Image (cartoon, rainbow, N blue to C red; front, side):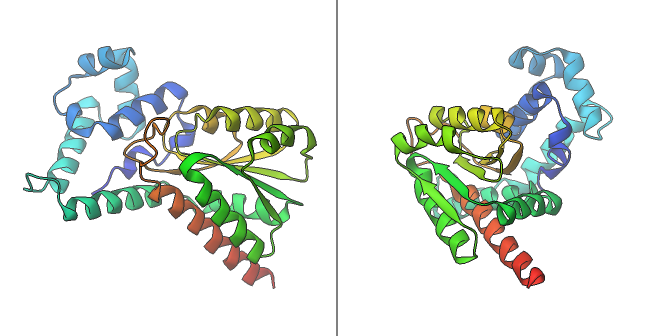
Length: 253
C-alpha cells in the first residue's frame, strides 16, 4: 500500500489543499496523533479545510483518512532499531515508487511532444542538479532533439531576452525555489513561452510558474544547505522522458 490515493488528482487541488497534502505525505506518523482540530491549528488552516479535503480525496472524513495512514505505516514499519544498509535501499525504493505513482501518461506524452516539436530546448539546473540537466541535454541530442544545457550564470540571465515562442525552457530544481531559475521561468512565461519543470512534489514556486510539470518524490527538498539530498526521483523523471521520447520517435518513423 502506498499513498498514491492522495496524489491522483493533485493538479485539481487548490494551493491550500496542496500544502496540506504535502504535510500529510511528509509526516505520516504525526497524523496518527493529531485530531482534525490539532492538524488545523498546526497548519494554520480551518478544521473545515481538513474535513473537506478528506472528502475530496474519497474518504468519509478525517478519521478514515487517519486510518488510511495507520494502515500505510503498519505495512511499512520494520523492526530495525538502527539505520542499516536495508534502510538505505528502502529509502531509495520509496523515492522511486512514489515518484512513479505521481506520473500520468497523458502528462508525459504532452511534455515529450512539446520537446519533439521545439526548435530548441534550453535546459537549466543549478547545484547538484546540474549533472542531471547535462545528462538530459546529451540524451535529447542523441534522440534528435536540439537541446542546450545552460549552466553559466551569466548566460542564464541573458537567456530570458532571446527566447522565442517556438523554443522551450526546461527547468530542473528539487526545491522549486532556486531564485535564478524562478526568475528566468517567470520571464519566459510572460512572453508566452512554454516552461517545463522537473520538480519535487511540493507546493513550491516553480511548479506554480511552469505550465508543464513532472513531479518527483523526495524525503527532503531544502537543498540550499544540504546538497547531499537524494535526487533519485529527478533521475527517474529524466529516464521516463528519455524512454518515452525514444518510443514516440519509433512510432513516428
